[in-house]
Length: 463
Ligand code: ARG
Image (cartoon, rainbow, N blue to C red; front, side, top):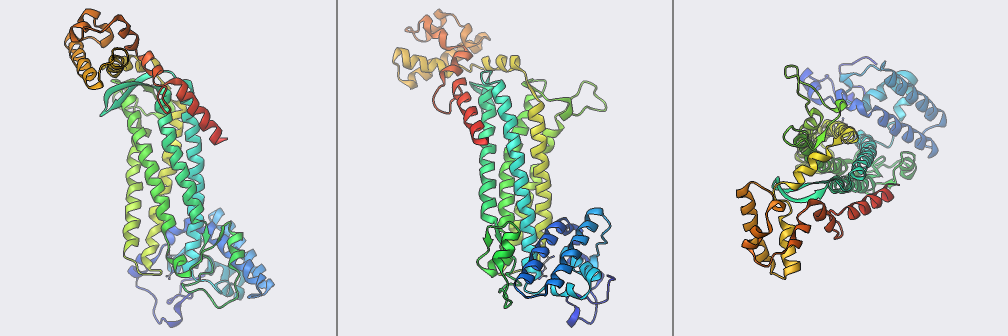
């Protein structure tokens, strides 16, 4: 279809075509062509329903179906000519349908509007992305379970304030992320279930006087039911905001983990080695192996948070129902979805390929007086001291070790007795990191027996 001076879709009351700047600010075809498959699916469902309810002739509906399938193959083959003058994906498809099948194309828009059409298309697109995120999270969790299983009892330092706190196990640290990504997974599933109502048939805003069958189109498009209020149906973008919220929280988890991988892969830590497949080199420093994927995950999170904020801002001042502001929803969501999927995949690849350096982890686990809490607990448990007093005595022993430049297990019993005369040789049994982690058997604790129980629970959940 050739561009005309006034729009053939709604140009009845217009004598002149739009200014070029108007066309530029108004058109969304540059980005909403990503919803072409969804738009055609929505139109096919609508056409079939129009025939089933007797609103259009079967022969017209059949022509629409054929034409829409032709358009889909043209788009897939890259031969479809998108036109900015036709504003958006909906009008581009409809205009092409007119080219292909003539007069019956004009009947497709009976009992619907672009307002319910765009809401439907966008929901279908976002729903696919929820499914992709679910799949991405599941494989990432499985990769983490693999790491946790391999190193369920490898000791490493646990940190608070990035200062050595208490020894933990590698498996326990990996399983902490399994819990985080597991909650992300559950958020994705909740949000997907909540958004799965069909706006199609809400028409412009008020519903329609045609005897349409909204249950039929909802079912054909895989929705659980039609949305119950037409005003809400055309103006709701909660589903996109929930997608961005889910993406933001998950991206925050990805970013924290990415930050740890950047630190852990440094020469100062050497906790992990990232694979060549997920690292880059330096053009000038031959020794370098950089954790670029982790850094880019950490950075992409900014785009996702930005999209969430941007769409909140777009929506917050809009009266019911549709306003053109809402056209600004898509690019944010497209970009955030791309960033989230890529970050999930990159993290999964890094985790699957990375090698934990058991020796470095163990050496670090024993440094920094990491078993000081075990010493204090021993004073309470064996000698019956109040915890506050035990804390004070242990602090004095840490200061002593620090001044000698040694670790707690290297202090002599006599030196210990200076801090508290009742200390016996038995104390040395709790100063080793292995003993420390094996003793933390409380539910959810770092003892390998607990870590293995959690790995088994997650494997059960994911089967
Ligand atoms: N391109 C528009 C959007 O993305 C489609 C809906 C247009 N509706 C309208 N009343 N102008 O929101």
